Image (cartoon, rainbow, N blue to C red):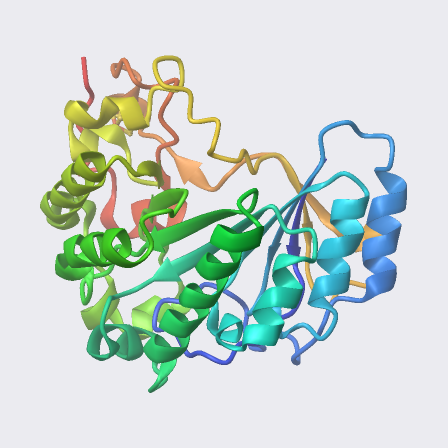
Length: 314
Ligand code: SF4
């Protein structure tokens, strides 16, 4: 059983592209530990279990360590996506690294304050990120090599030309990073407000992504791509996609999953989602020999840009 858990719906950053429901629909809320207990009890006999923890900003949940600990103690693979700001507090970072977490994923929107802080809308956030990364990588190196750290590149108009520098910066400062991930653009109501900074078509983004991927390959860092089909980047990157040729075992499978939101009170209210919101073109993709390995494109992206970026690989 995969559980996708938004443990809260508030955050200390104001990222221009955020897709989370940060108190727009419901007042700021934390998920209850009773609901977590109910989930754990209900699925106790499942053999393969994973908890994907997110938010809002999950590290701001007052009982985040207890939540991770509960899942880990009940044989869940625990994976958190966080902005990493709270890791700038050394004690918090140490306590969290001992909570039972298996994998931490942190987006890096830029490798300098001018870009990162512009993306997050909060001055000083890059310095907090850097300090946080220094702390968790130090703890990982010394005491917790089993914890995997994934750093994530964002594909947005404002920062995409800088992503190559981010890869170099990561290699220089955190050579022991376990994975770099690149996400396709996720459009949201917030991105519409910052269209000039955020939105970029995949055709426009492709040359920047290719140069990034070349660097990642040169440095020998494992890379995970989601939401950007192979036809956009070109077949030379097929080893990142074709799971039969090069099994991406590091890529955790999210679907199907139980979707758990902070305002929900009981397990009966949670939604079971079978499929991702990515789609393929019935005209183009049916002719493509990567159809099975490919995830397709984000639904919101298609609504806005159509399938024009896709060119079947025959
Ligand atoms: S299946 Fe469709 S989206 Fe995927 S690589 Fe082929 S043409 Fe592109």
